[in-house]
Amino acid sequence: MNERVFTNCSIVLEHEVVSGHVLVRDGHIAEVGEGPAPVLSHTHVCDCEGDYLVPGLVELHTDNLEKHLLPRPKVLWPQPKSAFYAHDAQIIASGITTVFDALSVGEYHDKGRIAMLGEAVQALHACREDGRLRAEHLLHLRCEVADPRMQDLFFPISDEPSLHLVSLMDHTPGQRQWRNTESYRTYYSQIATWTDEEFSRMVDKLQATRDACADDNAASVVSFCHQHHLPMASHDDTLLEHVNEALANGISICEFPTTEEAARYAAESGMTVLMGAPNIVRGGSHSGNVGAESIAAKGYLGVLSSDYVPVSLIGAVFTLAQHGTMTLPEAMQLVTSHPADAVGLTDRGRIAEGLRADLVVVHVEDNFPLVRSVWREGRQVF
Image (cartoon, rainbow, N blue to C red; front, side, top):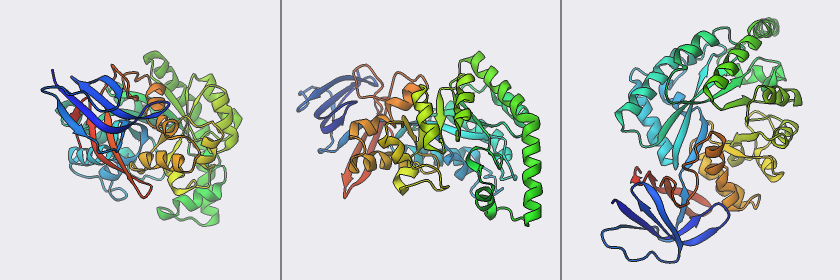
């Protein structure tokens, strides 16, 4: 047997924090107890020195891989596997032991995501086969239903074994997140500029393109996911009709709702509401949408995602606890048990006997959480 005991730690359980010890045997949690660890021969001891011991974080939607594969607009890194391992290192250093790498299937304004898609999926598959990844990487395909190429891009990669989550997106100006077309214009001003007339023509063209393909694209993906029992997420729900559309399609996760109205209705309808951890760390949305902490305070928030900053996930948990918005165990559930449950990963996300020993030691100093060490299935990976 391969045994290790974590002792002298503040263990963050689902409903309380206890001072105690955790015994790990053959990659699984064998015992959780209060007080000092029992003296066991031939057992490795990890003294946590009073720091927090928390479950490995579970991340359902991160664009972080894109930063490594596309370090500059339209600059595709020539060594995809090296980019993937660099991404993996950043993920594990943030305390994330299970990560859903979110890749866009379709785009606007040619930012390079289409060119990257195939390379990214191949790199994910190859690195998983190598067995050297420190976090467990799963695939989340973000389907841009307003792109007429979506089905041609989605179905050739839909048989990837790591595919565990699919979301439906619509970033057309005038829709959802971009109901205010001027906000859309400002957001894309770094990569495109238009005269007023040019912008108006571009918006009309994108809206016409969407109207011609979005319904068929969405229906094809929903049918595929039902057939293969894949969990689905909606994206940027803004109006009640968006939530109703998701519910009608059997979608269970409401990603990044942009209004309190949509978040409340989704939560009350039984959907898991996912919002961005950077929104909480920064004190608000970078694009002017509803604040995630206010959604948490009202009890509608179910899951946090690091989105574009991996370290924000652990940071948001302690921010919520320090502000008194939630208790530390409640906030920790947003990044551990809740996301795991939302996608059917029932073997992780809690410090409990019989579950995977995905564990993170976190030191807090001056209200700043620092990941000291990470263990995945009982093996130290950071």
